[in-house]
Amino acid sequence: MTELTHLTIAEARDGLKAKSFSATELAKAHVDAIEKARALNAYVLETPEKALAMAKASDEKIARGEARALEGIPLGVKDLFCTEGVVSTAGSKILGNFTPPYESTVTRNLWDDGAVMLGKLNMDEFAMGSSNETSAFGPVVSPWRREGSNVSAGVSGAVEGTHLVPGGSSGGSAAAVAARLCLGATATDTGGSIRQPAAFTGTVGIKPTYGRVSRWGTVAFASSLDQAGPITRTVRDSAIMLRSMSGADPKDTTCADLPVPDFEAAVSRGVKGLKIGIPKEYRIDGMSAEIEKLWHQGTEWLRAAGAEIVEVSLPHTRYALPAYYIVAPAEASSNLARYDGVRYGLRENGKDILDLYERTRAAGFGREVKRRIMIGTYVLSAGYYDAYYVRAQKIRTLIKRDFEEVYAQGVHAILTPATPSAAFGIGEKGSDDPVEMYLNDIFTVTVNMAGLPGIAVPAGLDAQGLPLGLQLIGRAFDEETLFAAGQVIEDAAGRVSLPQPWWA
Amino acid sequence: MSVDQKTVRRIAHLARIAVTDEEVPHLQGELNAILSFVEQLNEVNVDGIEPMTSVTPMTMKKRQDGVTDGGYPDKIVMNAPATEDNFFLVPKVVE
Image (cartoon, rainbow over all chains, first blue to last red; front, side):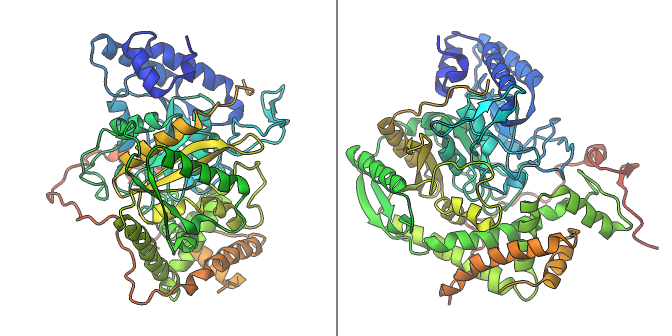
């Protein structure tokens, strides 16, 4: 029998149904794997007792023939989702030991469908980062190594050598899925935080349309851009997980009142007769020949599967990233005003209330978060609001219009690279100039600005043996086409052979 | 546009984040790097363009104007650093 941690969600679901193994055995296999993988720092909190209790309940459901959609499937949860009675940190010191007395809608939906919680996953602080290096709990080590790399698990159990980042901000989610420390993980994406780490780790990640998934109970970063989605090892698994995560929610007024399609049914649809757009503006200066080749390969795969390939133009693409670095910090500065040392989380006492606020926030927020709050405060301040914030929101209108015009020409989905490069080393980027790190999101951020769905699918390896991903961008609320086209790429590229557990 | 050190201190104060003298020059450099990166937005002609207010066009959901939640002050204050009788405690704000 295949090792239980190597199964896909679909295979585990079928195995549980056929009683080839129990949910308890499946949970136990993952609990053991997590324990041996602490050097990766993917989990910030392990919840083995909870996992085993939930698995036991699943076994009872299965025995009674009452299995639900995700019955007994062990998942990791990004620490941005509030989980009732389980510490939720958002990767920050400022939340301290915050223990929510409520459950986020996304995790509630997953547990209601029978999923099992393994623990909380590491992430960039407040989801602000592209490498998981801004976490207050330290960076996550990618399970991937460059060919001939010196990385190993040292005698002390710590990882030695030059390690790679798993991407961010959902770095713990991506690393845990790639290292087989869960069958799937929840993640969130404000500018690329699902798709970039998925691309870096050879996993599949989808950011659904804004409004597909409720944001209630998910710690807010930039409310008009934030959207949750899954990271999994196959396109089919993402379809299965997204269906459970989605749905209307009376607690989130921006969550759409739309029925959730059977995403899994769309996986085998194929792309015959679909029109796939290739946006010329994504061919950026200095793009590596490898990425260029991968993109071309993806185009050929879709063409061979019966899609019509057309060149399209999204003229405002290059302005998406700078506009994002006004809109997102502006919203963040407002959202993060709630961390005041009074109602929850860390508190640093001061001589008066103002001093208490300032000391608490100075001690509780990390450098990247402070930087973004300050940029946000500046662009919203009197005298600069129109020049920065209003202008950026106008440009956002233009970015969205670009996509609308392309879709109006009959294009069903757009194919682009997911990232400008493969994963880089910890400490290699952004130490002097924050913008260097921001450029990671150049291909993904447009999708958040336009509120559209986007999926990253592994499509090949670079010369160092590291995974590279392609991105498909869809029409609003048409994730189904992304699953269909994503499956074509997965079939053509072949499933990624994930790294062997050198860390265990 | 770029910010000077006085402006960095003013922004930090508006954002309610204490900054030390050593942090100010670093923050100034980083903020100016970001501001110079976003400068390119000035190339775009935005005449007559409406600023985006809602990314997916939808009518806001409405519900009946009634109390649907609450009645658990102990849960509200359970994560607070300092409380008394279900009130949040702060340093004295009125002399």
